[in-house]
Image (cartoon, rainbow, N blue to C red; front, side, top):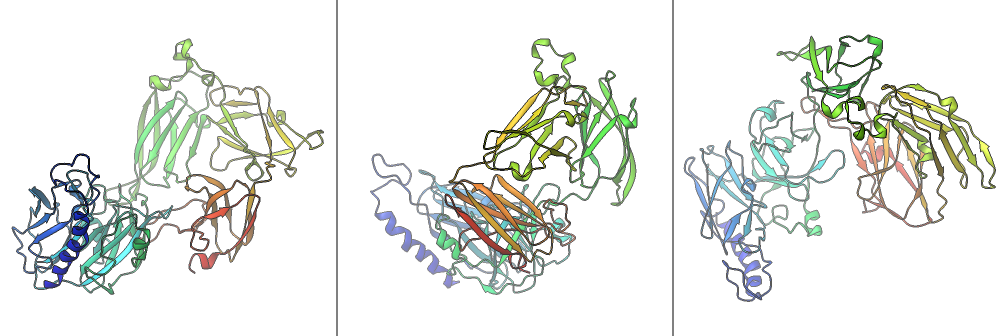
Length: 596
């Protein structure tokens, strides 16, 4: 027990000199005219001392006295491990924080009580740096520890405030049914330390604990796990850097901590299938949503309409279905939709289920025929279309057409595609049309000729080229585009080797919010990212195991991780810096990148 006393002396030795370098200040009232207090509060006394053993199971309490008056900013961050069903009860008495428990502790158990982002001083709101207090209801303090980092599986960003759970019960159901053997919260760097635990085998998980009960709820919470059983090899001590409290802006110190395990959080796809949402989106359209992906529909019909008058489209996950009615007759105020699908029964088995859905039209979705004429907009009577043809993307993606509603008539023969050469000669060009395989409201037009720098390309759509499911015709429109010719623009050439699987390669902007270009490949190749402005970019490569061109999530019960995402690093930098007027070439060995 005496080995924990030096911690208090160390804290005093660090903070007391700093305190006395400030002008005399009242700890209960902000000084006037002096420098702003930037020194966080610190503990000057603990009762009983850290490392106490034989703590009673009932009625245990602990006092932490600070050097100044403090307030409890976030009571949920006063965290006990192993957690009880109720959070610790904390009260302030003067400068002393009194912590007690509303239920009995477990026998022969080592507990830790942590304070991270929980306490601030009264005057300036400076946060207490944090502290982990250890005690035991048994005759000894367990001495091992585990560390790691929790990240978002899609972005690899570190996740703060996640709950890391440690189980001695290795069964798959433990995470869903019982509180853990030990738990910890992640800091600003997504880092966690589980100190003072037993030397044995554990299951290690992390969750975004939305309801604060330390039990995983698959319907609402993110989850991640370590594939294999884990056993601690590091010894816990208040002097090891993994247990010290650092300023989260101290990058070097925070990154110097050992992180043994990397846990990536994902959202599981629900396993119970049922129809849980529906809505009428217009007089002629509606949607239905299923709880789980890959909905199995045996049949679907609308009362009063033939099967060939229905247009339907699933999203890529097949958990949401859009429905349109291709009919000119007046629509009733309420559509009666019948869905015969496979629903999960009480035994977890998919069984046929027929549901009758009533879909009333609301004032918000009524067509112009029911509106005041003054409120009618052009979009109410037009086949609405948008065209995406950005100069830096048109070579790869072509002219992308997107419609608000499905098109039932398309006269592409009337579309005019022309280009003006660098010598100002106007030419007629040929093009191909491709309907999107995943979205019936999208088309791509591509010139048969290769795009040329200095040429101006024009795509013109005459009036009434398209007619949508509402019976509305499109307006005449045209779009012009030229390839970028700015000599300051740069390019990246990515040479991929060892590609033995399908992968998705994305070039992102510096913040990672926008995808500049994207490729899906399944063999060795060279990818070109042209027309790049000076700046910093990131390159993300995703393993597409099931070849569906999206990042699929994982499953705890099936011990399946979400599809792996890797960001290229350039030396120690996670960004690739692109100067002006530069051609950058980078070779990537895919097996090495994914650690195979």
